[in-house]
Length: 105
Image 1 (cartoon, rainbow, N blue to C red):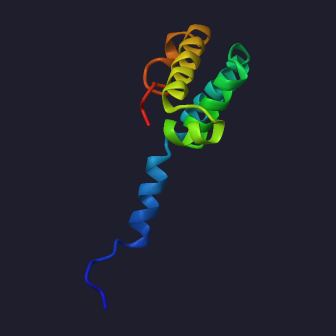
Image 2 (cartoon, rainbow, N blue to C red):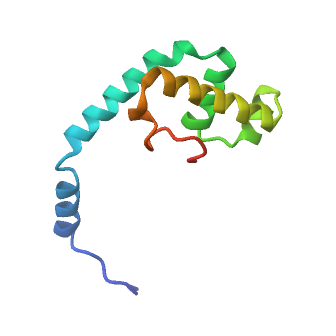
């Protein structure tokens, strides 16, 4: 029983192909930014690195991170803020324009 029309496969393939026209440039920039970010993690304390990894890598909330690390949510937020401040200072303004913005998740 079909209640909604399905799009033809050719239309979906066309959308996939045209959506990826600038994908190589975007992929290169993303890889470049990740390399820069990874190289800059040395300015962070171990606790700050853990918070960044759990917040932005695992996409956990401060309360969840606090349970994992045995810290209060406020302490997690402070560590996140401190880490982002250090990373912005190290990486420069190009990372402060939306890719890595505090509270964006």
